[in-house]
Picture 1 (cartoon, rainbow, N blue to C red):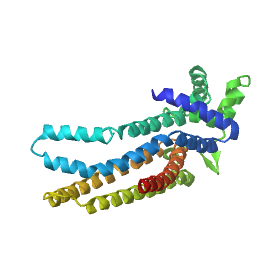
Picture 2: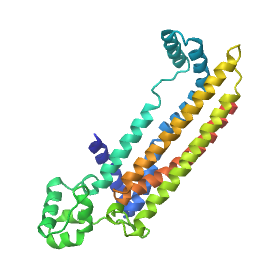
Picture 3: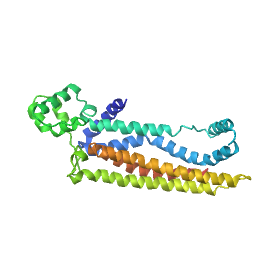
Picture 4: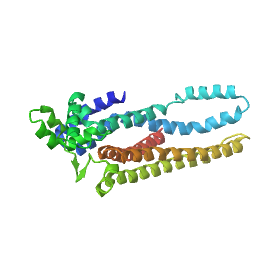
Length: 299
């Protein structure tokens, strides 16, 4: 499945590369286009998060009211979701899409000759065999990256092969070689620039998300619940919100940590995609939060 989407994305990246003739610029344009295509999903997710936050107090009341009757509580919970026109699994789609993108783009960046340039597996294996016969070391994980690096040698070896030109990808971007893998070039300080920028952008994104969640939780704590049980529900709600905040904080760190781990063992082109995606996500979240907040105030 991931190969299918990597192949599909490869057509888009190849088209953009044909226009700009630079792998780094093509990845930036590719990231912007993918972000725009997913904008409706992002808007829906942001609205769902806002709506879900408003439902929390109603859910706390139901949990307290039917704490001794689990079946009745579950029934009332489902009725609440139907009334609010929401699904308990509304957040799953976004998580699935993010995972699909993560792995598909990894496949694409790991094997650009296959998915972007559409060179056949037989030709790729032929080039690999030629390099191995010369005693050149070929990576088992990123053999196509090594083929791109050995383009000049392969061109001399196969002067009449039209496919060789497809290996001549312009990987230099602002003085950075996007084909390099940090783990394999530890002594080259330039391989750390993009991953470090990605770490900084991830930290900003996490701080932004945490600040938004804190504001939402403060509003919940200020909500007055009528009835004799109001104080007890509010205390219970506060304790659960603290637990949720801790869980969300831990989860928000997991994706960046996992991404950084992969970025150090993958070509820099992948880290560039994540960096640009992070920057766009920060801008998107800031703008959508303002727009949705204004819509709520108008309502």
